[in-house]
Length: 430
Image (tube, rainbow, N blue to C red; front, side):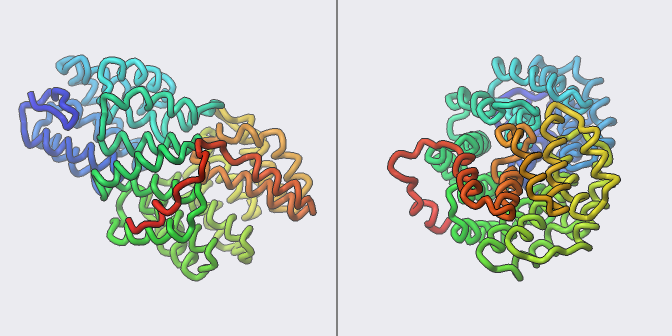
């Protein structure tokens, strides 16, 4: 048997299949280009290699082509009985995830890591803000994310993937000092980790270092390929900072070249949410509304997310429909929200409708009951600031200036800082 990078046995005798599989795992875990090609190479080297098939199935799902996962999933399940207990459990986790039973997959993952804690590829879908916990719709999901990862520190040590994901979990609950140490260690070990650079960008965002964040990300992403998994989202961070720094021409160039549907490459959920968020924040910053861009986004949302069910996508689709005046699609989300966070999706969608109509009091009334619940929508704090900015923007337009300021201060996370965050460390060139 060959072994993977975490020293677990693999049911293949082919060194070529093993090498291609490890390359694919690292590419997917680091958001680098074309893990699919690596997994297909692993299958070509050993068609009986079950983990290569399940990894291929997971990859096409992540890349927004879930229908293509059926054939490699079926082959992995066929081969599973002849694999090790770890591989059988690993395949079972992904069978749940790939067939729409994410919470069952999360339960299996929690059991799996008790025996095989360094099975990073199996653990990965449960982590980060877009993972099974992140999209669970449950309150306290940010604390749960950290609780899943923290106990594994001893077994992962300085592993670049683990340290980056731990950093993200820490910064989402306001533990910025710890997040800083972990993301710096991760990036030092693997500088071309796309997820690591993205997580470092979130740290800059949370501590308010706009200029340093933009400079870092522009430099890091200069040779980040357009077909890499999070190229679109990394561009979103750059566009937001450019707009906030008054560089509106640069921000709009980033939007049109790297975010806008038809120009961006990325999973559909990233294109929808990043574009919607940028256009709305641009308006809040004083940019004139661009109806044709909102119309494009509303059409995109209706095509790729026609039925409510994924809270994070649904609220962004609702905003796109509201700003484009697409009342029919918007009403589907307001009237019939679905999923574990449906009770939050409905009011947020209604608030976006009211905001588009310049009904500031109606916006405030719709959002007030769910302002302590919006973590259940999924996504990062940086992304969910969209909801808080909507609330604050409505308050400002309604003349409730002091209340808007109080709300912003009240909804920032408590963090572990006592003597001030060492911002000079983040200002250093990466």
